[in-house]
Image (cartoon, rainbow, N blue to C red; front, top):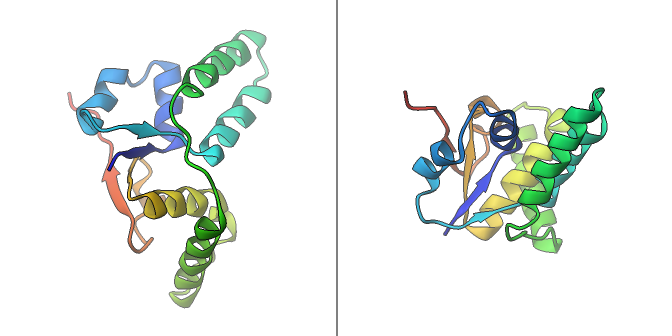
Length: 138
């Protein structure tokens, strides 16, 4: 088992809104993996930064994440994605604006990982996903 941590949490860590120890309260001693989709979202955010200092800070955070183990997208991930997208459509939900979230969910399901996010609404309707909602404990 282990965790896939959604992009929003990595952004919060990079900004200093969430500490690594806050995240560790959820992940405990379980391994944490990175998805190429999450890397792509974070790289996009770094590249579009209007301030060079912010860009450099984001790139440094991205470099730290590259040290974590990556999970791959393969033909099984694609099959799971297709089933999830079809399931949403059958329930009257358009998946077009949720492509990245579906890829992330597909990888978590395929690899038996929990998905840690604070964006509950993006994932609650995805069948078979072991979803853990991040809430900062005061």
